[in-house]
Length: 174
Image (cartoon, rainbow, N blue to C red):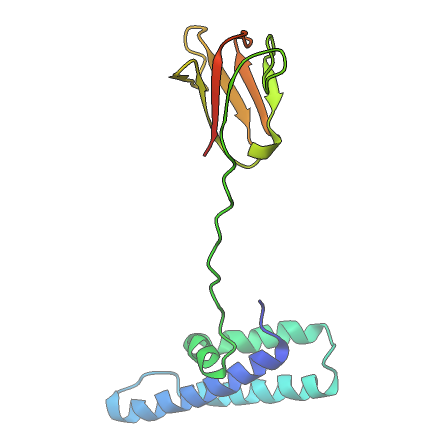
């Protein structure tokens, strides 16, 4: 979720404080940052916060706040952690893989006798492994042998040669 202008102002204020700490540490441990960073942040925070208080719906305020955020440089992530506005990584739930189709070719099967294509809507978005009579098939046409093509956006399976009654087809989504 993108940061709001109010979040960016909070992050900038914390970043300014962190920059002051770094400048102060620099007098003991050598130069760590540009000593003007806290003052630059202060000026920009004042400008953005003043404009935000006058007109929070001004569309140019988003760009100005993003500029302020960019000035926070190396402090922005730590400031987000301190303020509690840091991002969250949501674990991805893998899509449930549909069950494979294993059938004997007939006039009423998924790929009927004599057909050279079928639409498998349950497999849209997946790649497929196509096994014909126990032999995994290739998408390459080698010597005019048996092969297939798969369009995962449309769910269109195209086979060569045409399906023959009694063949065993196995189609696995992967």
